[in-house]
Length: 241
Ligand code: ZN
Image: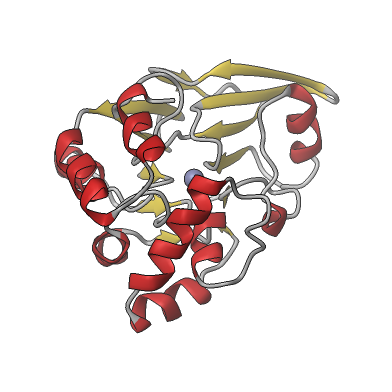
């Protein structure tokens, strides 16, 4: 299966990922939230994701766009994008976002946008301490998240022992360990690589692989300019930061 997160209304990036997925033999596509926010085409991205994904979770930007989370902890650029998004969402997509689940379990894997530790609080999982808390909050071996836009994986060898590593290439799950994977961001990567990121999971071999695909960035940047979105959001796409 494929696991995607944080599309952020970037249709060019999502279409590039869709093309990459067509080359794979997949039976499931799971989306971990933040379909909207930052980018120019929330409705187009929602329409495509709704046809593509068997799991569709609530992200903090999705919740913000329909007034379901407090935007006081959003920076000014994110808030500008929330206003833009809320102003153009179709009634159908607005209703769809309102009803999204925060957490799902599929094939023994826990899926959540930010953290299994109280999903609607949108906690970041970046440090071993963050991980140690989160590992207490889900059952099973693997949890997949998005939210920070930084591909990484945490593994827990024993009680209290959590390592954090950059997720790149392939990771073979080892018996007796538990894992949290951040699958990165399709539409606004922040790990220094501006290409769209997503993960493939082969549950027969027990291997997760991070994939990167380039997309037509200039096209989405032009649409952002036309939409009047902040310059900061337009230029950061090219930096992947
Ligand atoms: Zn996000």
